[in-house]
Amino acid sequence: MSAVTSTAPLTEATTEHVVQLDPSINVTHGVLALFEASPAHPVYAVPNGSGGWVDVTIRSFVAQVRAVAKGSSASAWSPASGWPSCHRPATPGR
Image (cartoon, rainbow, N blue to C red):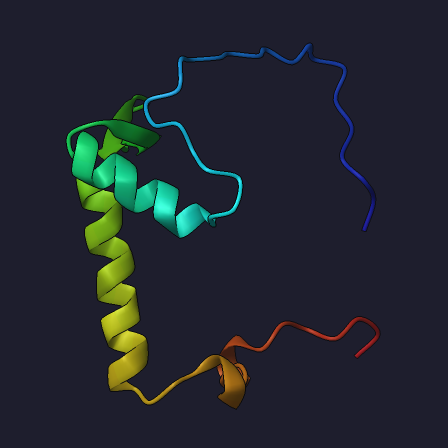
């Protein structure tokens, strides 16, 4: 497998902070603070299938994360049990 290289220039964009974060907390706290402060705030966009993009709000993102967590809990999966064999990352050279 060869590395992908590009000569296209990178475009950087910045926005003002919506929530100021305490350096002693983790990313979950920031996500939940943004959810509480501005649930309709778009956090990323996904392709819409027609060549455009559709925003995903923090409300939708939190709902998706909670659904995944409930599914993991219902299947009795835990980080300690490791990855199911069908989702285990491939071992190089095998």
